[in-house]
Image (cartoon, rainbow, N blue to C red; front, side, top):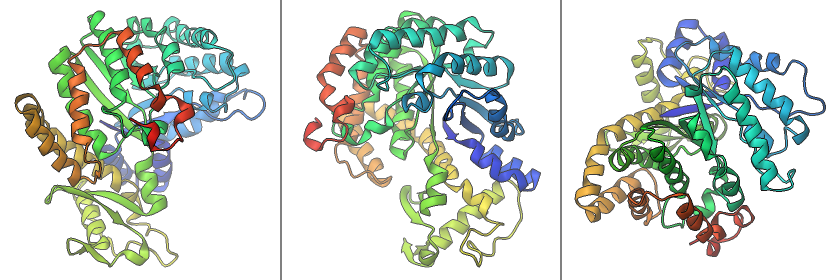
Length: 425
């Protein structure tokens, strides 16, 4: 499920690495990667925009095992890094790249509100124009992820007018959730279910029984628990094969910059934060083990997985940087933790889902134990996840979703995102 956003950071770092070692590391611990086509346009639109993009993209193309995702650059448009006056030219350039290059999945170009546009109708027209260019192109439509926004009423008003594009694109991505998480934690359900239900209802009406569904940006272990349960529930309630993926750039960045990782202890079936700071390596505060013990154990397990017999004498070199021998493994160590937890959850999901169906109260109790074990401090989260799964049974149409969003607009509208907790439900 996990897709590394900014995969070019990994492949670029591995350019000087032994080729066989690099191939083994990428194919085992980073075999799904996302790279953004969007970048800031400072003054004039670059004449060789695609050529400059190739400099990053070519490092990824070297690895045939990577499932390649091309982000369309909606974030750069939303943040005005790509100005309104260049939208047409940018869209043409993006479609040209998709027509002439190999990839596994690419996102439709989404043009969200960023205060440059006068009203909803203008944004609907701009999005339609961008979408129509992809429809008219020779790009394989099965490789396109139709990006849908719904977090605020304004965004919903735009995208409810674009859902007819599901006739062309059966695969979907939902965006714009990350910035809203802090204020949405007190909702009685996981907010993303509103957009998911809206899309599922449309797919069901069109008799589309299989969809690739990508969530942009949410990647904690708690998210993985929800995602695995959602896949089961959607198949059960809608008879739709719901192939869910999600991305994050935070996992490897967090370890490299902040020097800590979320460690999945498979033996104890719990997760906790492990510090990799040099002055904390020898502190034995993880069930009698030190950070150094855990890091080396994980690196040696990764090495064994790829049949690499190298020795790791130290974590830091004399200059206070990660030692060259261990550094490639540490770059992907948190991705490895994510993969470990995903596989564990996939084995456990039948137990939890059957419990949900047969004994909902016991499901909440057992799920809360799991959530506590992976670091959740929200005592209501298990019940919130149950409510979220329950909502799937309701098969809400577009008008019901609109009413739901308006009911909770005090929480979801962007003007309230930085407000204190009393604005949450």
